[in-house]
Length: 401
Ligand SMILES: Cc1cc2nc3c(=O)[nH]c(=O)nc-3n(C[C@H](O)[C@H](O)[C@H](O)COP(=O)(O)OP(=O)(O)OC[C@H]3O[C@@H](n4cnc5c(N)ncnc54)[C@H](O)[C@@H]3O)c2cc1C
Image (cartoon, rainbow, N blue to C red; front, side, top):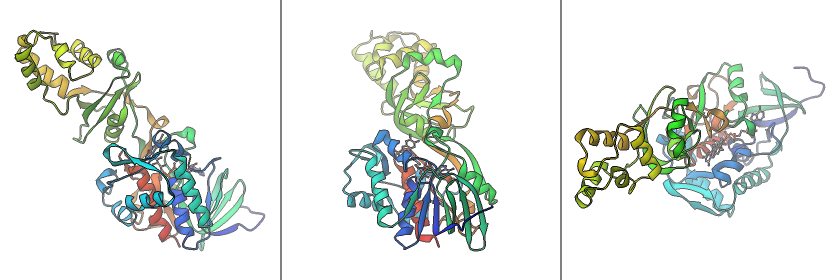
């Protein structure tokens, strides 16, 4: 690194003014650390602003380690215990932010996600954190007492360097592989990354089959081949499957695998048809099923399978078995996912075996820390990803030297 002037010195430099970076900055700042946050974007917290449809699902009432996917399922425990969702809720309340609980314990801002960004920036201001945007990191060097960073706007040095640069999802919002590359520069392994919490696309031969269903939404139980299942709403789109059920299961789906969809998770289809056939024996199968399922879905299921639109009192055992399969275990084979373009998160990332679960410091590189989405920790849909950002950030902010 060639340099004309002395680098500006800080105790802690955090790369990334997103959820984890801002939270870590104020936590370290309150410990009287001189903290600098650098980001190449024009605005801080861009993902927070668009999260949850602009209302930011900032955490969940109930956050447990099993809500996270990670090579080492124990890794998240310490940080989540040290800074649980109740602590973040208390912070939100202290800032007078109105919020509401939606289904599955999800907490959203009542007015705008901007309230959360403003809260984080206010905390940073109170903790005297220096935030500098539009800074491109050109090079990072490690030396005896820490790190020196060359940027397009001058050089900076620090004792502790925190990487909070996020994952690869939504490149148009400025996502970059910066954190993974830096990990590799320092010999820290990175678990393979892929898009998570993401809609599915259809094979060409399925496009025509499912086209009439575009816009249909209903609660289903969706299962991946490894047995993981979720009961949430599923949305058919012109591209494939979306909605919370599809996003949740995408974290557990591997290319080439099928999904099994139970369109009536609360009702046994055959018992229902039996009851109906006593009252209305001549009713058609389509009309009977359309009492409990969207009509367009029933038509597609029946027209698409070997099922005939038989009267209820004429159903053969073979047809009943087929109904059972089509309604309760419909096999759907996605072509792919929509990828990082629309994914909410990135699965994989900096290998947790390389990090201290107490402080997020790299075990082999003293003074280097990784927090938030860049780490191989991915939460379910429902506010868990932000909670990981907050918890890992606080663990680090309290631990940085
Ligand atoms: C559309 C969408 C909706 C979402 N909704 C929710 C939700 O409601 N609830 C939930 O829990 N999670 C949600 N998520 C996931 C959540 O946004 C992330 O898990 C969270 O933002 C991760 O925080 P982070 O600080 O690690 O990364 P980010 O918030 O992504 O912040 C990373 C920061 O690093 C900066 N950066 C990147 N590369 C560089 C570089 N080379 N140099 C300098 N700076 C760099 C970026 O500009 C950014 O400011 C959503 C994600 C998306 C895409």
